[in-house]
Length: 296
Image (cartoon, one colour):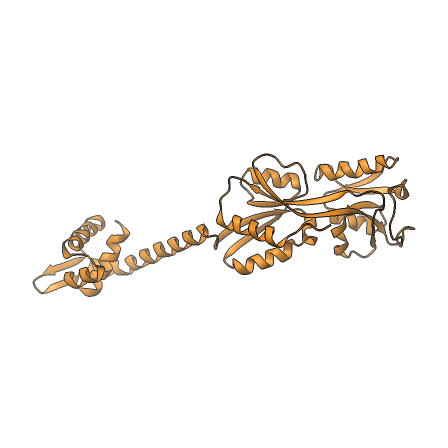
């Protein structure tokens, strides 16, 4: 049974005349008769009575009409859905992101992109950069926003943000009201840092900055999320070096002071597999490229 058979059947069921049905289908009568015979053979039942008085639906034919209409409607819907997915207007787009992207323009671009792709479902997953790379390689993510300069082969990337690290201090810290601080000013402070397993690059860079300033940092807490780092600092549990964008978190009890003697950049890259040609992905990447520019 083919969809063509169903279309021919429904047209003949409506006209009850081979000549008129064939004319409306823009075919000749013999192919119509042949297709109806093929359909009846496939169904295993006679669908029309043909006699000198014309064409009539049998009981089996009457019962088959709603089923044929439903099958054609489902086929049409499936075809439309396939076209929409191919054109990037439907389906799903799986997006990974590190938490700091919530303060670097990601919510805004998602909102704007959703307006132009209202039937495309955006599935967000907050993951570390290492976890995102793993999920991208396994095709469990379509695109990610990562904070690692170590991008493996086979990926395309866009630098979407570049910001300095700043000192994050409790609001009652002696340096909380300073316009800027030197790393030496933090010597002897208990440091709260992002975990090495979550962000190995920036964990190491923070420790190296302190060592280059001439002192060994005293790490008291290692946490999975930058926002957790700021939260502990706001509760007086130490000091930290964090991305500047976290000032937007507005956590009470924490202040952010620029560093005057070091410029460590915290870069964010939009990352996707080079071998992916998904239309929705390409549309999203274009939106990112157009609307997100490095901040410094």
